[in-house]
Image 1: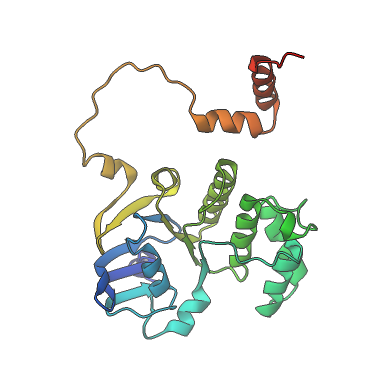
Image 2: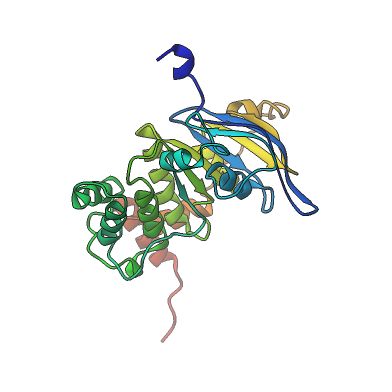
Length: 274
């Protein structure tokens, strides 16, 4: 394999266009995603993020431009593209009647993989779901369902994973659990294309961020590069106060810090007079 092949992007999009009747959703979208990285496609509702993912995952066809995944053209080689990817939509696609382990075993069996039980156990351990593996998914929290959904998407070891707004509807703790799962994917060499409308999510997770607006990519770069687009900040002394997220996680989390926070909260809560 040549150096050029080694450096080829895992995802390449050039001049992508898509319209629905008179509504132009994509109007010449261009970006590359390096292998083993997390790429965030950031935009408001209706910006076209899901449309890009649906084209890349061969669910719909584009009206113009080209798109490649793992060197495969999505228009001319859709079957091979589907073997190289996994797609996790905005809502967890898990069977609530089954246990977490049964969900994983079922998908492994449908893919005709050997030792589906061993595959399920390994993924449960990887996503910190071993203790919950024997419980029905109907008892899972939102964050646990999302982690299970992502685990299911990894059966068969696809090199490229699309996560379309994976933390929609989750509480703060669930979002952090999913963020940890996404980081775990990239650490194992999986290429992740993440769509989100949450600025902090892109900031926390992505190696590169592209902002999609009115059917075009406005900017594409690292967080540091994007920050340079604005004038330098004026340095001022500001006393840092805990954020609401800090308070929430301190109270509902585990460990000595959480116990101390709950004790302080209990002491500060006015007692009702009898």
